[in-house]
Length: 199
Image 1 (tube, rainbow, N blue to C red):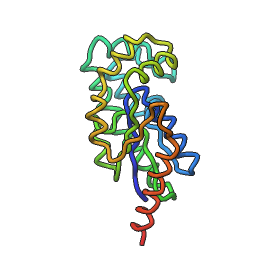
Image 2: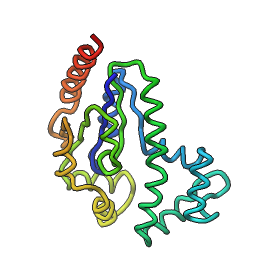
Image 3: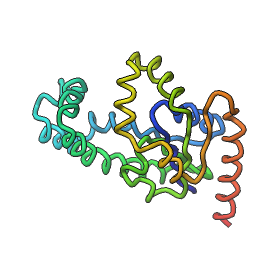
Image 4: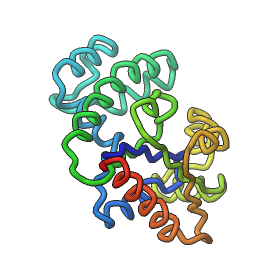
């Protein structure tokens, strides 16, 4: 079975593209919600996060997101330390999930595939690209935030052109180009490759 990454900058529409692959019967591991779940449920990770941020890191059983956000916003090094705790646990969890899949290929959808060196564990990476103006519009309407706030989030991500250059395939999601034919072409390609690999 092939292991495929799916990535893109904020507002690129990678989750929408992931849903198209799911309609085709391809399982998708969504790294962001899984990381959030693991931060709440994985005892050793909880303990490490409390060690980093103090007991205020959790309200009862739930991660205290506003508090964590306020700390990492002031101290960038704390964000790096948090990522260093969460990424290995999420990578291990996704690896074990990948091993359980029985399809020709499975997808890991994640914003930080190259930043966290996840690409080393994958056969191919698909990038989802969209013009910056469109990405900002999508996020402002989705998250009810200002374009300035979206700009700040974008600054924390790898440059879009650099990210797409590193991808093996790129899907253009600019609301002009049809997405489904692009997904179908990649889907057929991976199914062929997986069949050849299994011979």
